[in-house]
Image (tube, rainbow, N blue to C red; front, side, top):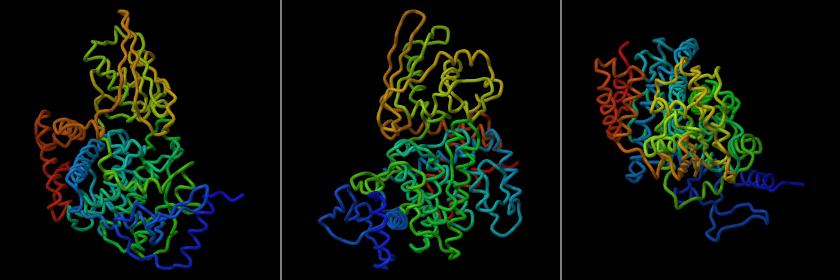
Amino acid sequence: MIRWQSLWQFIFALYRRFENNNDKFIEPSNLRSPFWRMEESGIVFSASGGRVAQIEEQFVAQALNTRWQDFDRATQSAACALVFDSLAVGVAGYCAAHAAQVSAAVAGWGGACGSGGDARGFILGGATGGWSPAQAAFVNAFQIHAQEFDCVHEPAVAHPMATVCAALLAEAARAPVHGADFLAAVIAGIEVVATLGVAARTGPRFFRPALAGVFGSALALARLRKVPRATARAALGHALSFASGTMQAHVEGKPTLALQVAHAARSAVEACDLACAGIPAPDDAISGPFGYLALFEDETDIRSALAQTDRAWRVTEVSIKPFPTGRAAHGGLTALREAMVDHGLSAENLVRFTYRAPPLIARLVGRPAKPDMTVAYARLCFAWLAALQLTQGRVALSAFTQERLSDPVLLALAQRFAIEDDGTADPAAFGPGEAIVECRDGRSIVIGVSRQPGAPDYPLDEAELLDKAAECLAFGGLAQDRGTREGDAHAAAKALHEAVLAIPGQRDVVATLKPLLTVRR
């Protein structure tokens, strides 16, 4: 029996063989509305007619046609906010667990530390020495994701900026890049990553931030380089060859989770380089029988994801994290904070804290606290994170020390926290959630969580963004390197914020940002 998906792919293959005009321009207004689709009853055509646009063609044309001046103010503001947040988080990652070891290992791959050639990249929070673009992309992507503080597109279950920002920053160090092009490429890359994630109808089997990230970053680079459409499509093909990422690292809580993101960013640079060198690659990297959708996702509806013409750009759908933990823990931590502030909850008075939420929450952060936890595991363990917040007042970057990870008091307190699956059908839902708090004084407190701080409908304000950035810059040692007092990290954060807001008018992004992101060690 032939599955409809296979028949659909077969028809597309025949179409591509006989029409042979793949370079025909696609109007931006038609990018999200192909004129026919496959349903169980057969092929359904739209009344408007027109040329069939393949999935890869739509992604490529949409990315290459993005122009900064065409975006509305909300889209532009969202892009600048994500760049600012990602750069600050990346600086903090310079002092993350294993970051020094990663940099040392990558330096041995050749091209770093003043070796000449294309080695002009730099590491966020590091010294200004030269790195090759691929090396810089790898290390910076690791640093951005290493502490689970980077932004997230919740419906896609993906962290788009760890790969996209790292890859574009590496490219911008090769030669002067105009700020407007840089930001347009950011928006284009996020659009691809998020759309691939939103198209999934089941929970992730593979690590989507890395897998979708390599495709989004490859097209972001193609947009920045302004390559022909055929070259951009070849970059997607090479990206498929490099695509990888397993959820096993997430289950075990190992730093290889961030390394998978790092590999994706580096692979995107390499994929674009190979495409620009004229090396052929698979055409149907996304929709082919052995492409991304068929290999890495169980069930998808990519055409519905592409055909949403009444929505804003996906960059406006990205959440900025207020806590350096897995996003799935944020609903419970938000409820716990309310219980502490509004109801006076303390460790002494807590009997049991149960957070009922969609199944994704239990799957991602419902793991038990244990004495031999790694830092990466602890960031994904709601019970331990909640115990930390209840005793320390907040979850800070500096809290993840080996002493605290093995603290018997925290480990014992963590046993009073639990996550309960509420049976929600949506495999990508982060909420709503509900906390049930049982207290020793006999009170039973119920706290609903309908939205999470940092989400598009509940954004962090400018002061909160600056506070987060200041913490990141201080943790990464950047504020101290500038000779400022610890309390003046806000001055460094404000200077970086102003520089990012000025990017659209700058002719050289790296010349503008690099002095604010590297240290004089």
